[in-house]
Image (tube, rainbow, N blue to C red; front, side, top):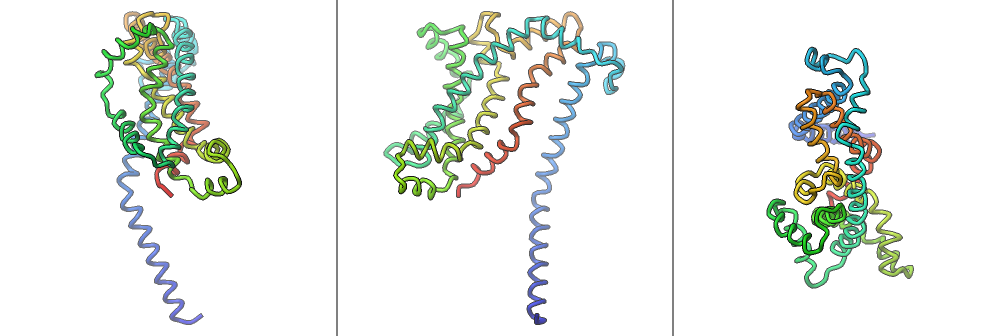
Length: 296
């Protein structure tokens, strides 16, 4: 190998190292902020879980100390004090079917908007985007009148309808970007092989879009599981309250009794499904976000 070739290779390596250092230096503030925020969030979650296993005396005598004994009876009190079991089941009944309907409706709509250009397609896309920016309180009165006229107000079914309708704009917008990032060549190859539009979508694009669907499902599940305003306005029957309303009732109950560890146990009960979902599906969620972020 000649001296010129060696010098050129070394110069190329040095340039790549400098580019890498510049890249990491430019991203360092963002990584630092995100890292500190993640550590703070993790610390809060662990502190709530740890405190929920203490006694009331231990919480006030040593806020940061580990519990001497694990008081699992706090969860029993939280579960039965304000009938958290009923609220938990109500949330499952309204959130899971709503989530399923959201994905069934938004997936083909997003695929069509990202792939097929027809008259008015851009307008429809812009309407979905505009729907994301509408403040929720502005919709309370017209939605209340609409649900009353349909005789589904103060029902879990009516709340589920609201969840589906108000979640579609964000989900369609998110999945449109994801389906738009998938290679067009796969569709063309399937069409050449004789596949219809429905077969291309269900057999080719939908399996490839699974990470995006999982990402959309996680975001919607977190939002609907913790939703409070709509449930407060459109559910007046305590027996039909969701978990967020139940947690508020538990807060009022524990406030007068001074049983703060029971309240913390209730908070952990609300967090558990979201944490479990994220632990098992976080990898697909990250891949879905990164694949949908840049159009190929």
